[in-house]
Image (tube, rainbow, N blue to C red; front, side, top):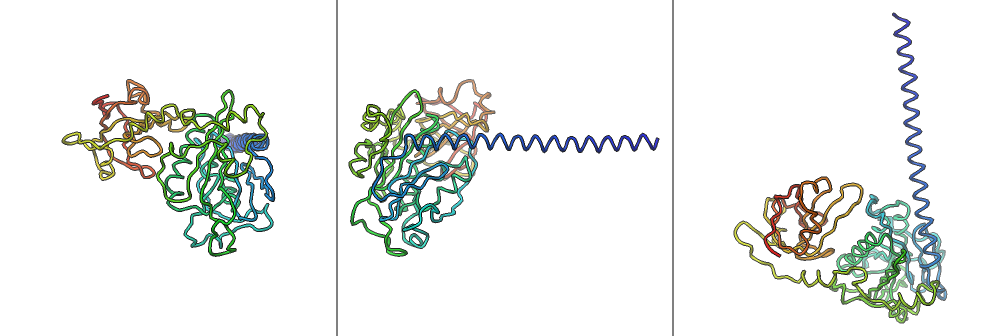
Length: 396
């Protein structure tokens, strides 16, 4: 009996050790596979930036090449001429958060701006390549905080209209699988300087963002130009062509493209190429809040009901079903489209089976009322619906 019991314990120990070793091997294999995938993504980005994204040489520029972005640094103005990066659809799955580790770029040995230039200057440290565009990779996100990717940006612009532009471009990247993005200030002589630190960091008057869809089979591009001050988002009023940005900056963008393709994409300035329903949704978003009757509130009033049960009503002006492999959320925006949404109906993937229709298709353009507890996500009031009876269609 003692022998059998000892044998059993020995077998159990061997099995445990074997299981533990198998678990370690499996975990290591997963890590290796993930590392290989990350390396492949970074290699793809670097190749795309080198072959397409880097502009023709600029006098006295310093090119700082990092794992997922390249900065053309201007040592005279001590800010970048431009920064080019690629936004992958993988931002859907990214979980990295802001690192806020602002620091000098180690690849730039002279005239590098630093924290003393910006501290209490009254300007935000404005990212050219937005940090949120790299949330799928820790190192890439961290490198976005090099001062070679930063300019002095009006705080109201940076936190409002410009932030919404960045959010919109990320949405387009998800819709188009990937985008090449070039962002920078319009530099010229006699720009004002930050009155501290080195006293040599230029404050640009205008900032641009260029977006190129180079993912086969379609090729399209668009650019935006914003003054470096507090202005409304009004995306349609800031659309320009790449040609016009080249005239302002003197930079020859996408010079490595075939001339015929370069001429076509650099002349484009159509919002509908990236968002076919933009103007239709914009018109629908220009609304006057309605009185829906007793027991019902409009989308603007929802903010006053956060944490409370309510019935919120409004017209559906934009929708999106995001198959992100995790929660697979459906976004239904009332009265104002993303990224200026004022109220969102959220339906998670596991609850879509409780609806007799595809919410993003059936509800588009309809006036609806949503019942539930009003929550808040990133500043926007929302109700999460897990059953069809929470949503009532009251008009078209």
